[in-house]
Image 1 (cartoon, rainbow, N blue to C red):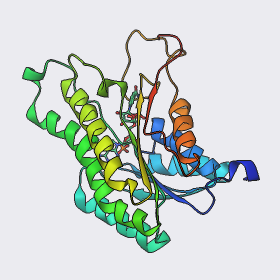
Image 2 (image 1 turned 90 degrees about the horizontal axis):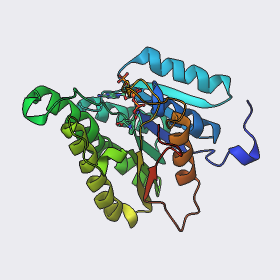
Image 3 (image 1 turned 135 degrees about the vertical axis):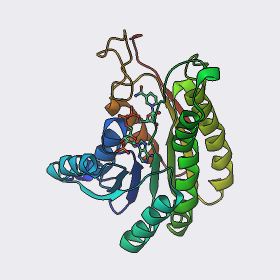
Length: 243
Ligand code: NDP
């Protein structure tokens, strides 16, 4: 598909999307590419990133694949260095990479699972901001969109580590939004309800009623195409019918 004037709102912009090899991240990356952005696809598995890149290319969009583990500061710094050397700017950062972790009561959770969940869902976002915000400042502004969860606003029995990571991500997002306002960088958080991906079996839910990855991508597209004087700092996304 060729870009048209109406869908090329992000032409000339560089967007980094973590966890874009599948699920919500892949849908966000495809949507941003469709809006004309050059999208940097990152995650740990190159084949899945390449599959997203192929989909984007078939639709006439542009993307680059960079392997990155958001829990590893050196890996994230290497990503930022590659982006700097290749594009010398970043306008959009979508912190989407996330994991759920094992279910069960917190007192029975293994410490290494706690570490994996918090290191991916919260520390990884800090690493990405630490490494990419300076580039964004050089671009004189931009958007950071953190993919949290409705679980970041509610209790999740048998998923306390995940809930803690997303409550933490919300607090981080609200705070950094204030830090970066003056630099013309708008930090938003999206809190989707259950979304139909490989993330979790979502046992007993009607998958047709669940949110789809494209619904989250649509919310991201709305945020990055807002007029410069306003920003939706938080979007809570619910399915119309309970799944
Ligand atoms: P998926 O499991 O389908 O995809 C997760 C993505 O994150 C994969 O591309 C994975 O790639 C990447 N990822 C995981 N760990 C790392 C890491 N250490 N470094 C880099 N990339 C990593 O999940 P969803 O698409 O469903 O979830 C995306 C986000 O949305 C998550 O933050 C999740 O918490 C959130 N969310 C999901 C909901 C749902 O019901 N699905 C509801 C609300 C929020 P790879 O393994 O190749 O690294």
